[in-house]
Image 1 (cartoon, rainbow, N blue to C red):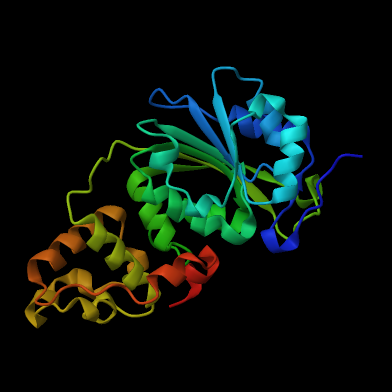
Image 2: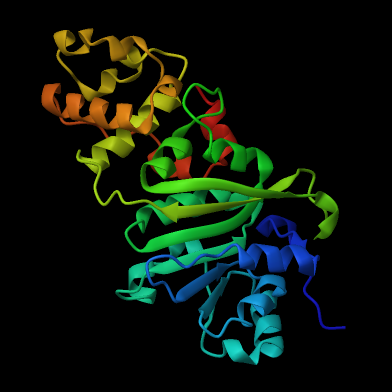
Length: 285
């Protein structure tokens, strides 16, 4: 029988329920005139088959597992020329889909869920929508409001540019092999914010630095940005990172821009942080 063996090191848990697959695909809205749809990690194509039932979608899949790539080539001839045997995290979407707005969909490998969202953020002007199945715990955090202990780096960064919706949960028994956690499907829809009105590179640095030392007040957490002491008398510096909304972080970034006396540092281990699960990002304080 033609099949693919799920690989633990790739975080593969193949969805085996066609009704849930159809529900995930039906969650796509294709805003802003999107016709290009990119599926991440199709595995054995349970979502792919439903995507191909929509001729209005120009469906492309990206798959790192060579066995899955060969399986898809044999079983989905309609995908000829649109199967990318590659690591999604290393792709330049601007080159793959020049000048094209994009919707992304997938049963995302659990071990790279946060990295996928950082890749989306890096292409936020192009990626108009994401429908993804991830760990429920992570999904909860993405949509979390300020004030929660699980409100973290990706909560702020994604909510700055996307509307985040929790759509529905998915039990473990519908996967092969069953994961040890509950799953959930989320939808991210690009909001109207083209630019935050501050230095966006600095905004990302401020958010990451604030949450990496989240038990500290912002006065102490943001010392590496080199502000003059009187600049930190603003009451916001008595707060902790999880107390600030996206708008608060924008205003904080503007304040730092105006009052720093040294060039802002590159946040320590920023690259390696992207390689960790979001649970570590929100728990490390």
